[in-house]
Image (cartoon, rainbow, N blue to C red):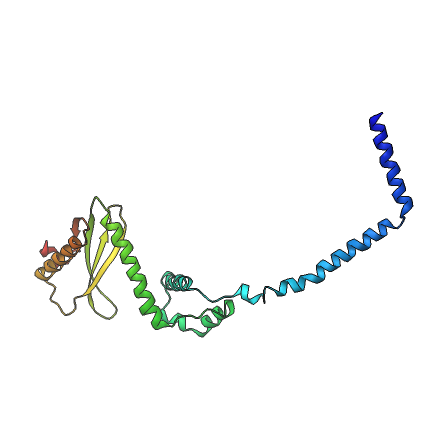
Length: 216
């Protein structure tokens, strides 16, 4: 009986509303339409508060982002074996200008000097930090070669106990006599530097040149 009374009351109430205002549905529709129209017309004014979209698509680089960007440019140069002058190519400049007009590319001189020098310093710091912690000891490799300028170079490579090689130094010895005495002095000098850096030395390996063999 209770459930029937509730149902009857609801139906009666609904009928009264229908009889009282037959245009209720029309009013609701107009009100919803007006509300939607008001919301849509207010959107442009809301968007305008955020400024032009260009400010969200392109932006100038912060100091930290600029350093990262320069490192990426250097990595691309090395990985793709580009000449350092690629950064001055007008087509490259136009490409980056198209991608982000706020970005200014460094020139070849900046890339080969300031950016490269900073990258080498950062690499050396990380390299030395790892080698100092090598409890087994590192291996010191010497190798000599002649570059495209006909310079006699002696390269020094440090290899960690897990087999990771690190290019440490490359010395121009073109003006020096490469005898076993000079080689021995170079080896002793490198060993002394490693000792000062507190890098444990396990072994020294040289190439098969006569002067290097005699220095053993």
